[in-house]
Amino acid sequence: MGKKAKQQPSEQDRYKPSVLLNDVSGVTGSSSRLDRKLYAKELARLQVELVKMQYWVKATGFRLMVLFEGRDAAGKGGTIKRITEPLNPRGCRVVALGTPSDQQRSQWYFQRYVEHFPSAGEIVLFDRSWYNRAGVERVMGFCSEAELREFEQSCPEFERMLVRSGIVLLKYWFSVSDAEQEARFQARIDDPARRWKLSPMDLESRDRWVEFSRAKDDMFAHTNIPEAPWFTVEADDKRRARLNCIRHLLSKVPYEDMTPPALKLPARRKAKGYERPPINEQFFVPDAYP
Image 1 (cartoon, rainbow, N blue to C red):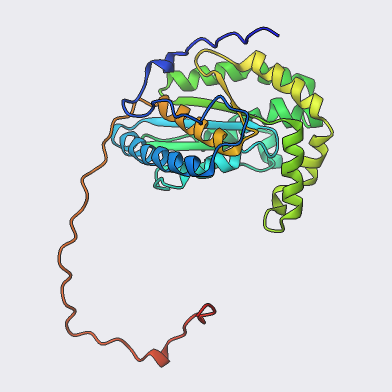
Image 2: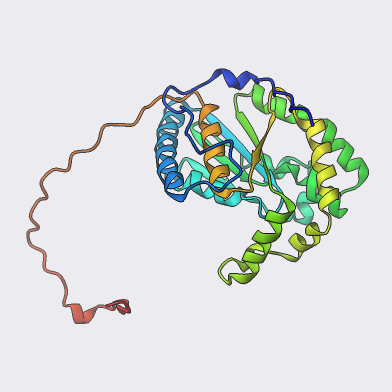
């Protein structure tokens, strides 16, 4: 089998932050699982960079929107969690919309997503997005053929409009093998704390692997545009996928380190004229772990 054609850089490829991103041995190009210690060390480093990026985004009024798509259990949620962990939630939001209401079904298809778009200085991460129409709605028969064709035509126009307005739009597809997805489904079934992550719809989509593959290929063919290209994340190794995605995201934002200087704690003033009420007049949570 011949080598894959090298993807041409988009307009946003011109922007590279200054620190990042020397290659890290062991992060890419291996079929084995990434070492846990290397993962933890590199994740901590990248999360510091995410904080620097957010300071810059807020200071400059930058608007960043990131879409996470992929099969069930591909690792989208875990990556989003590692991105948002260190960030100030006042400037970074995760949008994960449920099934549209009857009213929303009667609206312009993109309408319920638009209200969640970033304002100046905000980062918005979509855990699934308007691409539901090209994926699950298409495969499960929740939209008509005419609605699908309208989406394929209007989506690129819609995204070009967003980019022209100044929003930086990144689209990630998390690619997972059928064997790895099967293992993750079983792990969710076996873990009571994670069982909620597996729905009857997930099991239904499991039986339509080929249909979803064809839908994804068709989606890419219609919506992989220069202004907002698709970036595929190889996701069989969760640790490697998270690091690769975060590094790539950081490389697409032309941020500079605008971290404010550390605050200096003054000497604490002594409290005067205050006595704490008697402890027996208050209710305390029992200490169950002496």
